[in-house]
Image 1 (cartoon, rainbow, N blue to C red):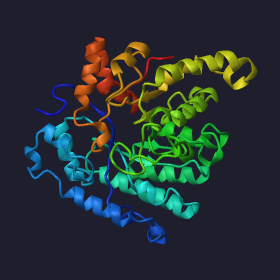
Image 2 (cartoon, rainbow, N blue to C red; image 1 turned 45 degrees about the vertical axis):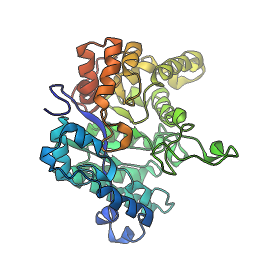
Image 3 (cartoon, helix red, strand yellow; image 1 turned 90 degrees about the horizontal axis):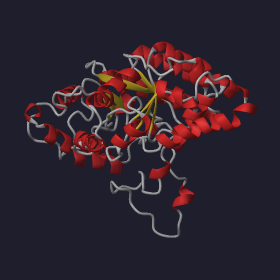
Image 4 (cartoon, rainbow, N blue to C red; image 1 turned 30 degrees about the vertical axis):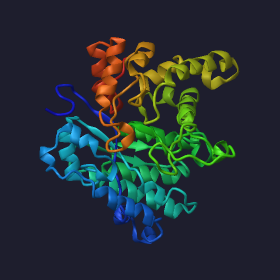
Length: 383
């Protein structure tokens, strides 16, 4: 029996665990030696983690044993043939695959040649790693910092076989994502039939360092490290994604491009009910003075319902969310093999759905139907 059992299940969030030298394999010679390398400390941590890999043959692992190993110790952390075996055990029909560490090797660069060369290398690597198994959906990264270069990177990623596009949820290039210079990018993504995704860590919120300066020693994050999310970061992680969606909605991008589909991944969903109400309130109270809002043909929240999906954290009360906002907005994710996804996300989601008395049709949408809609396999009835 697979982890999903008889339930049809698709996974909207998983990751590669890159190793030293992985990104350089896919980089052009002109930038290869300029990519930031993994620190010696991280390289040592990778080696130590890999020593903890399960010793049982993969085809003999139970789902619980598979989900117990995390990070670089996990089966299929980077090896595509092993990821196929992991998917067989999990029983997920499809799995969206994001990078983890490789973007940090070029993201901070102000040199456009290195920056966009790194993007091309990353997207080649993602496409090649996921190519052997059609269940694996490679996510390309595209920065809007330079719209012309972004379009070139997008076309190369689509040609390579990437089937989803991640963009920073911040105001990339000091412009709104709804700036007219980005119109052709959104139109091309919609035309290609792939979703645009926002993900934690790529322009997501969190506190600026000043907010952590309280005159006391800085605590470790919940994983025991130094640079990840802490308690004070957590409530604001979604803020940039909220702003991103607000701009695409109120500036008419979703109105003009009804086929543009968006996923907000690993940023939780408890904030969504308030966001939908605030979005409608903004239009109702400010619309008379803002012509773009007056041109909208639906309530702003209806564009979100038609075109956007959100992945709750395993500890979010997904049953309550469905009660509040309906069953068309939320979708399952495992975050495999990251530890944040937990060792049994299905059970945690099921407990919440049971407590709220969510019916089987709505559960089917959460576990697979809304994934189909995000990927363009079905059409939303909203609007």
